[in-house]
Length: 232
Ligand code: IPE
Ligand code: IPE
Ligand code: MG
Image (cartoon, rainbow, N blue to C red):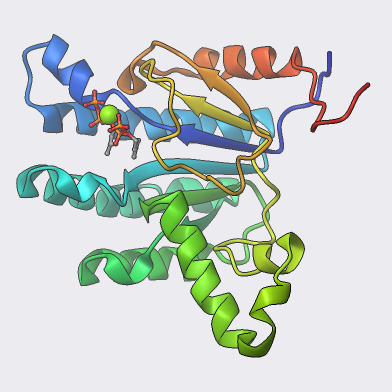
C-alpha cells in the first residue's frame, strides 16, 4: 500500500467511436466529446499533483481510418492546442510531444511547435501529446539516431545509452498506464517506457471519463506491489 500519487500517468483514450455509436451519432461526434474528456482529465491530473501526463491521441496505425475521420481528429488536436492556451498559462502547464513529428500535416506541425515554444518555461504539470505515435516507431527512430552518432560502436549498445535517444529521455517512465473502453492491449503505446508500468483498464468509454474515474484508477494503483522483478 502506498499513498503516493503516480508521477507519470499515460492514458490510452479509447472508446470515442463506440460512445457515438451507442447514441446513434457519427464517430466524429464521439471524438468531439473525447476532446472535452481530455480537457477535464488534464485539469483533474494537474489538481491531483500528477507531474507528467501522456495522452495517446493518434497512433501510427490510426491513418488506416477514413480520410474524413483522420482530418477531423487533426483539426480537433489543433483546436485543443489553441483553446487550452489560457488554461496552460493559468496552471503553468507545459506541453510536450512524442511521435513522428515529420509525418504530420504542416498546419498541425506549426501549431504543436508554437505551443511547445510558448509553454517551454512553465513549471507545472507536463502534458505529453502522443500524436502519430507508435512505440515501435519511437524505438526505430531512436535506433536510427543512435546509429548515426555511434556508427563504430553500435554493437556495444546498452539500455541506458539507447534510452537517451527516445523522444523524451528526461521524463521518467510512466508509473501507471490507463486504458478506457475495456480492451486489454497496449496498441503500440509506450512499449519501451511502459516495461514496468502498472496497468489499469476500465470499461468506461473515454468521453464519459470524469475526475472521479482518474481518482479510482490512482487508488487502484496505490494498492499495487511494484517488485520490478525482485522479491520484497
Ligand atoms: C479513440 O477512440 C480515439 C482514437 C483512436 C483517435 P476510437 O475512435 O478508437 O473509438 P472506438 O475504439 O472505435 O470506440
Ligand atoms: C489506441 O486506440 C490509439 C489511441 C487511443 C490514440 P485504437 O482504437 O487505435 O486501438 P485498437 O485499434 O483498438 O487496438
Ligand atoms: Mg479504439
